[in-house]
Image (tube, rainbow, N blue to C red; front, top):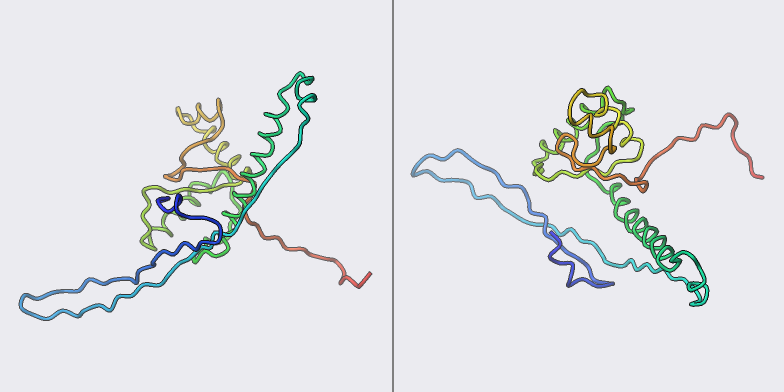
Length: 193
């Protein structure tokens, strides 16, 4: 739902209610039922990021070039801007309430991993009809190898054009802007200098 998009501007805060859970109870005709106390909390997001790009290209340089440099630079800047917005959005994953256990993904376990992700969402009563997964190029490679190894039309399509689209109900998008963690193991304790 992006119905709010046209009304938001820098400095505004988007507030959405998060409703408390409700319960169902056994009912006997003529008997009383317990009334739930419902409440909602606010989830909010402040719109406070403004990004810009710009470049100067002299008209004579553009005229004398065999290439459309203004269009080429515009495309480069557009890609950088998209990557910045992608990174800002995907950084919010650290605020997630649920995470899957860490696993080294491989061709042999990728289907189980996506199935477990869907199961975890269903256990949280998340609507799983329009699932989206943002995956790294490494995961894309694993999905491609998984699909290309199949003796099916799906495998044939992956060999021809690489993996794009849905996998186990997830619409998959590839990004280099995913969060990650790493452990640095030092052989000796570092000293100043």
